[in-house]
Length: 129
Image (cartoon, rainbow, N blue to C red; front, top):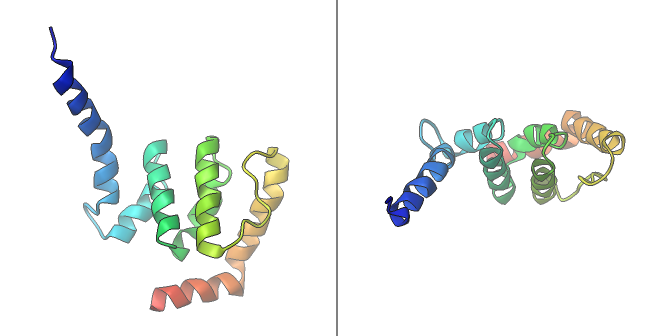
């Protein structure tokens, strides 16, 4: 008979190890690890990266977060818009629950914002601090 008490521990450690290594800075700075998590194919890792970017108000993550708004997993979309709100103070009319064609208009506004002088000035200001 297998001792499930220890079996659960190993499963827990095994599940969280890649996430903690990615966000914990192994192989690079904290910001590089957090930003790379935004591109992860593992949804849990991606969401951890999204939360990290929002909590730390990482302006350089705005383009990647904008891409996440059209992710097939609605939880990724939800956390992405929450992070964007924390960073920029607005959602530009995006609602993760609406139809894709409605979301597309909002994502277009986000992409226009990324190309704007307003975004560049914020990103440059934060980078130089």
